[in-house]
Amino acid sequence: MVSGPVELWSLYLRRLERRPVPTKCCTSFWMFLVSQLLAQCIADGRVTSFRRMFDFCFWGSIIPIGSHRWQNFLAAHGPTNMLVKIPFDHVMYRTPILVVFHIYIKLMQNMSFGQALKWTLQNNPKVQITSAKLWPVANIANYLFVPLPLRVLYQNVVLFFWVLYLSYKTAGDKKQADEAASPAAGPARTLAVALAALAANSTPLLLPQ
View: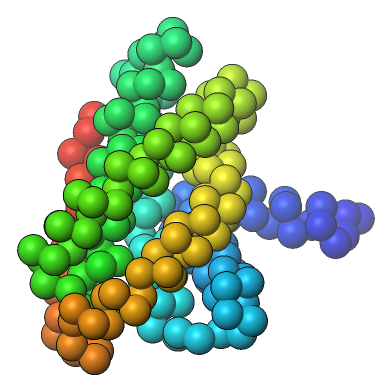
């Protein structure tokens, strides 16, 4: 009888087969939660913002909706040549989703849309350079060796460390956000931004499978 990690892995695979998207969303949520928790503890020595934790965890819980569909689209209709597939994936998915993430996180900090867009235009290019160094290399192994059902999980593992980096980078701008925005975003605004982020992450649902 299997036990311990082997049993948990078998359970995960069974859930992944039966309910792939909810399973990936749940896994991503927990990875974003732990990553944000660690980022705050590393930066400040303790948890300093449950609101930031909520913002990151919500994003983590919805991003697999699009990435699951995108991975299926790439496998069925995307380029087969790895020299084309890697840059195609990065330009068509990684680059825009990082822009959307930055706008989302600044809107959740209660910046106006104009302020969030201005901040993103100023700061996103630097993070895009780091992203371009990380994701193409990480995805070479993903597309060569990882089975399709596990590719989002593999990317979630990479995302764990990527979120640590993003959390640390955006944490330094919290004071600027507080100065430019009201003390706290209300529930109506939070709901509106969350729905907009969900819609953006659901765009790949339009792709053929």
